[in-house]
Image: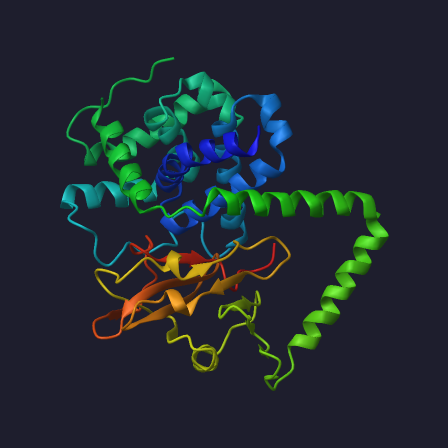
Length: 163
Length: 210
């Protein structure tokens, strides 16, 4: 990957990845920081990324690992995102949306990651399993538990998980 | 689209609208530095790396003298180094793991012609921000093993503004949020904002070592 191509890739995917990492971590600053660091590593190891052929997935996985690594060092807490206070003022969210965001932050990190990859990144269960390094059955269980935790905050009944 | 997908998408959209990416050239520059260091480590071998680490400790001790050393355009304290550059900019390096004294940093920035409000445990901002801080501040993100450095160009600060530095020690490390504020209209909050305010920048100053 040459400089120009990398710059285009960065410009096209940075904000999308920050959005995905934010929904996984619940922390805007951490999400932006982790994604930026992941892009730095991506450029430093671009030969490997060229061989793998899936640069955006590589950056997302690396950013997740960076965020998770920082979280593990923060021994005072048990879950990603739960350290972070909500903004004192947010531009116009409805009470339902605030409640949903709070509920999502309480979902265990790996369940949240599976929910984001499956629902937001539009991956299949097998693709989520490949990215997260667990079996498809584990992904299904995480999705089911995560969706059950969020169901009280959604008006509709969740659709079943499909392959 | 399911309601769950819609809610997740809305959260992600909110976050990506607020994201303030560094320039691609800066990411590439940092990536090149990382690659060079990695190659250097591989070629140096374990013993030499240990020697480099030892030198780093000695340098750290040298910087932690109790009295700031003024002169030759450089101010050094235990917590930060501020260098006045010939082109009118100033380069600020804040040492990891050393809590800086806000009044000292604020006074030293002022000495370099940079009006600033430096706070610990709170952050002041104007709504709307008078301008994006990115027009005033440039600099790399923190590299592992190095202290974060930023360059401030006071000539780019609009009249009637100052820089707001809000430092928070969070459980997962230090955070400093920097924004331009209107000196005549700003508010201060004691909670670290989850999302950086529009036009601000976030730096991992004071983060615990890896």
